[in-house]
Length: 554
Ligand code: NAP
Image 1 (cartoon, rainbow, N blue to C red):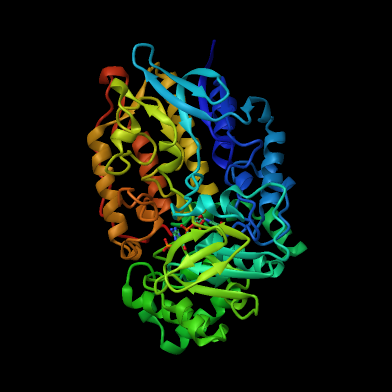
Image 2: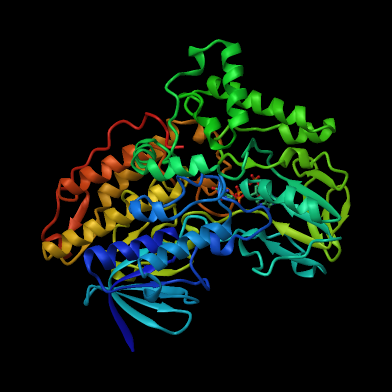
């Protein structure tokens, strides 16, 4: 029997929880959330690897919609870890009574649009069938693990894990010889912690990466009070900066200061730590020469920390501008390579040939291992959506429609898929921002849009194909206006997944500007969307997004 609801939300992370609250409690819809995991949290439910921690600062990594919630909640550290984030989301669910609408352990496997009934028909892996007027994918951008296809893995006699599917009971690495493949944000967090317990850790590095110390620590009572008392101010900054963080990007350019001043600015930012480093100058992400100064500073720090010159060279020989790939922050990452029980394998000079029953064989040697840890990232942004069998008008599949890369309007809707919304979908600022800020904006926009449809008795909304094409162009231009386009081998381009189309997926025009665009679109009667089935009540389609330049949203 089909379970009939007004809105079905897929995913119970930050996005799904707030979307449920908006749709059920503000719009008044019968809403159900399907969640594959056994509890709340999305990425924080699954990612429990050693050293896992958020790299947004806790006072901005939260919902802003409820002042009361923020007065009741206190983060303990500068960067929250997964258990504290799960506890926070648990508190949110309790306060707003959200759990009763969430079906845990229930994965949506297919979602087909029934044109005759103007309904979405969704099936789950538990055999449940739902019928919904509105379907909202709140599936996260980084939730589909990328496990590399390295020959021999099936024959490995030891144990292997992907960081995004870390066993909830933990893994005892004491006395074990561990090989870690991958040195992105995850690998950089995991290696120092693994090295503390394992007998030996070999880090397999394909692309070296910049990193800035996180400088995590407990928050003082004074800071906690400041956070409680300055809710609106913190919110105002997070909602007006390009990247959704609660710090402003400096207005000065690198060339505005002397080399000595520049050095002092970088040194001070290095001491402060975290993602604020890339906010030191306005032009770091748009001017190669400006970026070079930050890149050289950070490479110099690696060389100063790592004692073995060959290892230091392999770690600091970085081929892309600083922050053109997602910049990690760390706790003792480079210092870890000074330990006697840690070794680096540079896969650019000594690539992996295969996995053997006893370890990993590179071109020059075989490294014996008891455990392999894949910190190899995600099939980002499109992966979680394409993992579902989503079909729109005429039975067309999202897989077919996105064969050359994602096509969306504002990262919110896909032409041909009426009443289907994506929270932080490809084409929205999403991963280039502090995620909860982007999520709140999307969940509210979607709820307001649905409220509008119901108030006006409009049966459907669908992205116009031409508007989506123009938006796609604008997304490309926005990336090309920044140095993000200089790291074509990043996951922003889908380059980490073999066969994935190379298309820049997030919107680099900045969160604040994006928010204005979305607000204007809605205020002008949903320009670029077709309102009403058959376009009978079509909204104005003419839509301009302006020049792509400006402060990048990172
Ligand atoms: P990632 O940035 O994609 O890094 C994956 C690493 O694995 C890269 O070093 C990559 O090398 C390597 N790799 C992939 N396939 C490989 C193969 N076949 N052989 C050898 N090496 C391989 O993934 P991630 O570190 O999980 O981070 C993904 C994103 O998640 C981050 O950028 C960030 O947005 C988010 N994240 C956030 C936090 C946080 O908030 N603190 C923590 C972790 C992750 P190449 O660079 O050569 O591809």
